[in-house]
Amino acid sequence: MQIYTPIKYKQEQLTRWILSWIPTYIHQVFYIPERSSYITKIFNYRLKQQLLSNHPDNEFKSGYYLFVYWNNHTYQMERIFMHTDHMFKALDIQDLQDVWGFSHHDLIDLLNRYLKKHATKSIIDIFIKDDNCFSILHKYLPSFQLPKNATARLVHIIYQCETEQPHDLKQEDFKVTFYTDTLDEFTINQDDYLYS
Image 1 (cartoon, rainbow, N blue to C red):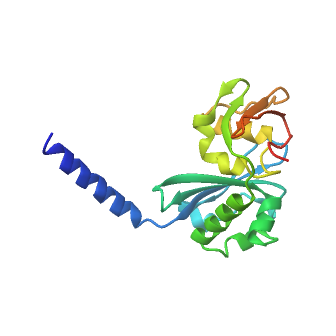
Image 2: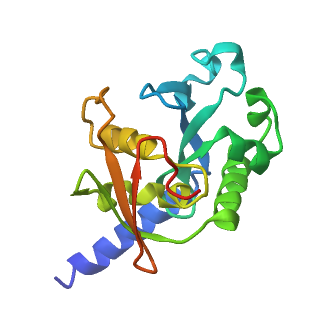
């Protein structure tokens, strides 16, 4: 034990030092149309030359954009999603091509600042069809707390993706229940916003 602990400590220090040299970068971007359960990958870091080839007309379509990015401060992949209305305000742009005029770090920084500035009450627990899914969806909480951003349908789609379930195209009966930090309970159905 006297040898193991210092070696393990040094190993963790070395790992953190190596990871600290990886800058914040966007790994993937997905597009989710409103009132739809289809997800389109429009950007993959490893395939930069095929940027936006899956996105028709390379312009903002009404819907949601999900960014998966490496966070240099926490040394892990994190996620942000925003409706196009919020992205227009956060980035002050009108065309998807303008998004790529920002560096990856600045783009993520602007989106995170916007989320923090406009967040409403904190969500402390979340259920889909009476199943607790807080541990799976906790990385999306800042995006859920943005007013007029997340709908019950979108929460359900993200949950299915995170748990690698097949997409349930019959979504008339799903509901999302969540609790805020003031212990208020809200139940939202289909295309209603979590916070309006």
